[in-house]
Image (cartoon, rainbow, N blue to C red; front, side, top):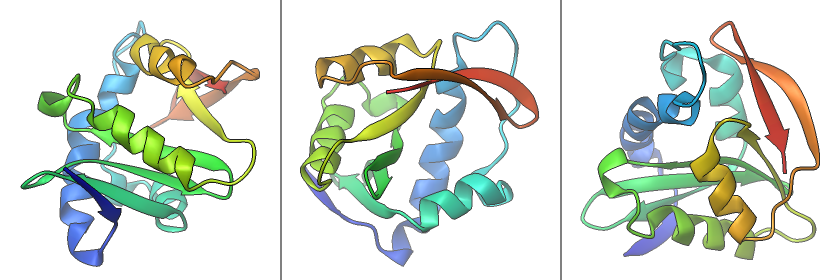
Length: 142
């Protein structure tokens, strides 16, 4: 296991992880969502690329996380690598590299993610409406 800074050569792997994992955060929503690939989503891609990105590598890239300032902006793990400590390790690494009070956003219905964040002391600070690919979604700022 190795968590290391993102390199340009990791871009395809990060796009693939996003494509495989993004809709899982919307799994508990009552409506269906269609994936908007990260490379076709200028808002989310821009926010990722202006962030500090780390990848979790174990013979291949299994997940990645990103932060900008005090905000964790991304934490994605390949579906077949979940529940093996990858997300937890990335979250710990991000938190160790952020000074001050840390915040993040999680889809309100994404109970597995919210449970993980709660184990690290995150609490819901605010709830707001957002959208993904043109469809409304409720988000918790933690």
